[in-house]
Amino acid sequence: MSEKKKLSIEWLSGCSGCEVGLVDLHEKLLNVLDEVDLVRIPILMDIKGYPKADVGMITGSIRTEHDLNSARKMREACDVIIAFGTCPVYGGPHSGGYADTPQELLDVAFCSNPSTVTTDIPDQTPKLLDQTLPIDAEIEVDLYMPGCPPHPGHIFDGLMSLLRGQAPKIPRYTVCYNCDRKMKKSDVTTLRRTYEGPFDPDICFLTQGCLCFGSASLDRCMAPCPKSGVPCFSCGGPSEPIILEPPKDVRTRIAHQMSHLTKIPHDTIVAEIESQAKTHYAYAMASPVFRQKPTFLFKKWTQKSEEA
Ligand code: SF4
Ligand code: SF4
Ligand code: SF4
Image 1 (tube, helix red, strand yellow):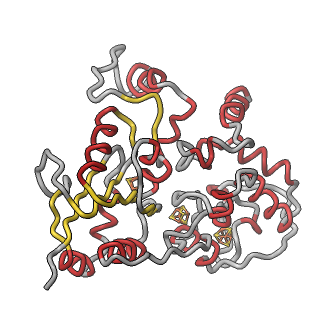
Image 2 (tube, rainbow, N blue to C red):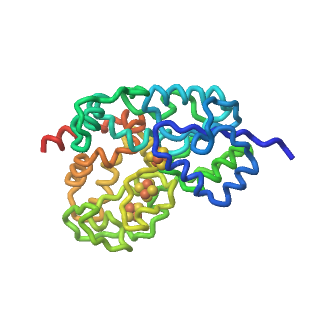
Image 3 (spheres, rainbow, N blue to C red):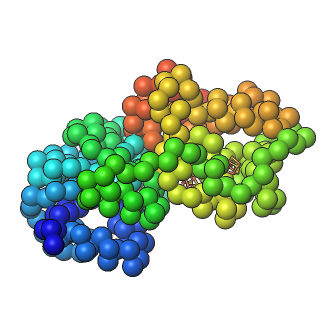
């Protein structure tokens, strides 16, 4: 029997949901463990160093100096690096701090937070960087596996392919592909937010005047949200055309589609998305995929919605 590959895992700033995603492999985790020796996994073992490994998996994004250091150490120690989850690929939900300085974020968290009676910001250990960074802003990445967390099927396929030296299957469809709701034309004239239901469980949210980002999101999840009555908010990151084509824009893509399905004007939909940009762009706005788009005027949008 050939020697087992060594797998090393490191978590940077994230929520540990990606580690739960690994456990969601259930009995297939045993198949993975048949092929690897885990040399580092902080959620299960108390280990301080960065042992040499064939495959390194990084969860979470770079938010602090400690994250930066750990990402570099992992790159030195591992032959192959997987960016595991939306956080390391695009920045993840804490990309939402993009519009604020670390000082402003700390003020909100401590000084102007009604539940924290303090005027002092605690010592920052480790120190926050100016912005959240996807890991490829600092180190080279060999395999990107977005998803918040990625679906166990994609985890298993990606990991096992890599361990066996094969190219992983990378489906390119959007969340709509796995959603059972029917997209059809309607006479709806007004937008409704998610809490303004009820919504017909068999009909596309867009048809019913509710924003859903499924058609602009890469499916790494099998569409659990629209299947459970919640519109997609794109936690898995943008679809391939949005990634590859700088002029393609999430808000105009969704507005174009929704204004054709309903009687809601295109500009009304665009304005609604811009007014909630912190929600709709939260998961990937730390990434140049969004930041470098000429149409991504996030600071202007948030300023406008704060003035309103
Ligand atoms: S990608 Fe999602 S599940 Fe994974 S660490 Fe980030 S926030 Fe948590
Ligand atoms: S836009 Fe949303 S609700 Fe409509 S088909 Fe796509 S994922 Fe389903
Ligand atoms: S928000 Fe969208 S991308 Fe995220 S799990 Fe739900 S359906 Fe998938």
